[in-house]
Image 1: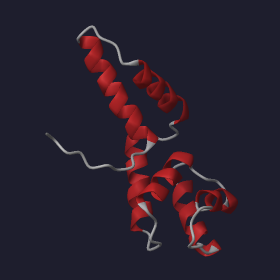
Image 2 (image 1 turned 45 degrees about the vertical axis):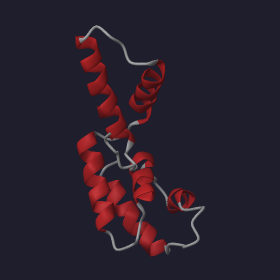
Image 3 (image 1 turned 45 degrees about the horizontal axis):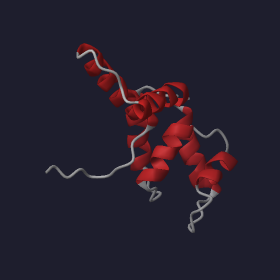
Length: 114
C-alpha cells in the first residue's frame, strides 16, 4: 500500500491535475466523477495564476523570513490579496500578529504576479 503525504496545494495545481486526469479519461472513453467535474469547474473559475506562476510565488513567499506556514502561503497564492486588510483576513485566526511592514513585504511579492 502506498502512503501519501498530505499537503496543501494551490488551486492552479488542482486545476492542472484534474485537467490531466480529464485528458486521460477521455482517451479511455471515460468521464471524470461528478465530484471531480465540480472541482475542475471550480478550479477553472477561480484559478488566477498559471501553475508556473503559482509555484514561483509560493517559492518566493517561502523564502521570506516571516515563518509563514504552508497553508498560509497557499491561501495567499490562491487569493492574491490586494491590501493590508486582505492579508490580515487570511491571518485572522492566528495568534501571532504580523506587522504592517511584514504584510507589505508579502504584498510586494504578490503584486509581481497579479
